[in-house]
Length: 256
Length: 258
Image (cartoon, chains in turn cyan, purple):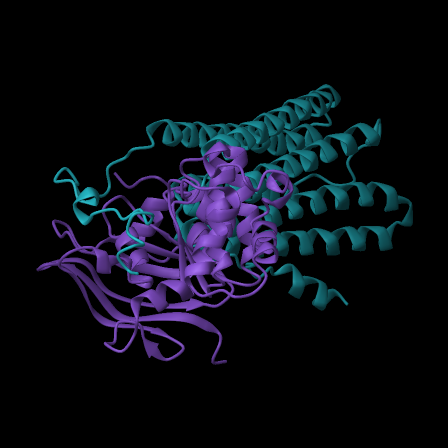
C-alpha cells in the first residue's frame, strides 16, 4: 500500500531543493528602500524634536522679557509642531502597512509612534508657558527668573541628548540621561519652597506665585517625558520594556 | 502532562545518502497548537517536515538518525509500520492534488482503503464540514474534484486528510498556490482545525507564519559553506517576530538576510 500511495502523494526529490546556486551570505542589505524610509522618519523626528526644543527655550525667554508678541508666536508655532507629529504618524502608518516590519523594525516604528506623541506633549508645555505669559497681562513677574531658565536649559539639553541616543540606539546614553532628572527635580523643589515663602510673606502674591509654579511644573514634566523617550530607546535596542525609576516618586513622598 | 506534546524530535538528523540535509534537530511539538517552520530556501524545512510522517522513505538513500517520538514510540523503529504513521500524521501539499475522481470519492477512497466501515455519507459530510467546504459542494458531490477552484481543491485535500482522523496534520506551503482570499480561508480553517489536531506548517510567507502559528522554528544552514540545515531558534511565535534571540533570525524576519 505504501507504493500505491505514491501516485497521489506529491513527493519532491531532494535535489529539487538543492540548487548549486544556493549561497549563504549574511549582512547584505537587501531592504534599501525600507532602510531609506526609516532614516527619513528618524530625520523627521529630529526635526520635530528641534521645533519642540526651541519652543521650550523661547517660551521661558519670552516670559523673562514679558514679550507678549513672542508668546503669541509660540502658540502659533505649536500648530506646526502638532502638524509635524501627525505627518510623521502618517508616514509610520504607511511603513507599517506596506513594509510589514518585524522584530527590531517593528519595535522601532511602534516606539517612534510613542516618542512623537511625547514630543508633541512637550510642545504643549511650551505653549502652556506662553499662555501663562499672556494671562499675566500687565502684571510684572513676582521675582526675576533664575532657576526657571536653568530648568529649561537642563530639560532641553536632556531632550536633545535623548533624541541623539534614539537615533543612534545608544543604550548606555539612554540609561544615563534620566539621572539628570534629579537636578531638574531639585530645582523644582527649590522654586516651590521659594514661592511658598513669598506667599506666606505676602498673601496678595498668591496668583503671581501660582503662575510661576505652573511654569516650573511644566518644565519638570518635560524632563519626565525625556525619561519616557529613553525607555523607548532601550526597548528598540534590546527588546526590553522597563520603566526607568523616576525620582518624582521620592519627591512626592518627602513633601507629604 | 503526557499529552502536552504531540511529537518530539530528539537529535534528529536526516541524510540523503552520505549527505546530511538536516543536522541534529531537537523539537517538542505541542499538541493542538500550530507550529510553523520558516527559513530560507534549501535549509531543509520540507525535508524535516516530511521526516515527521516518514514521507522521505520514498526517497532512495534517505535515512535518519536520532529519534522521532510519538506517545513515547520512536516512529523510525523497525516494528513501526510507516503506513500507520502516515495514517496518524496526514499531509497537505503546496499544490492541491485531488484524485481525478468525484468530490465524494476523494474523501471516501482513503477512508475505505483504511478499512472504514461506518456510514460513509456521514464521514464525507463531516470531513467537508470540518474543512469548511461542505456548503459550497453539498449539491455537487458527484462532480469531478477538478471542477473546483484551487482554494476549494486545497480544502478538499484537507477534508480528505481529516477523513482519516489523523492526530497531526503536516502542511507544506499549503497556501502558496492560492489567491489571498483563499489563503485567508485556509488560515482561518487552520485555527478551527487546531482544536482537534496538531498542525505543523512549512511556509515561505513569514506574515503567514506570524498570523497563524503559536510556535515558530527558524531553520538555517548551520554554518557558512555548509549544506546542512538545522533549527537555530524555536520559540513562541510572538517572541520570534518581536524580539528574536538569534541575530540570524532577526536578519531573516526583518528581511535583511541576503
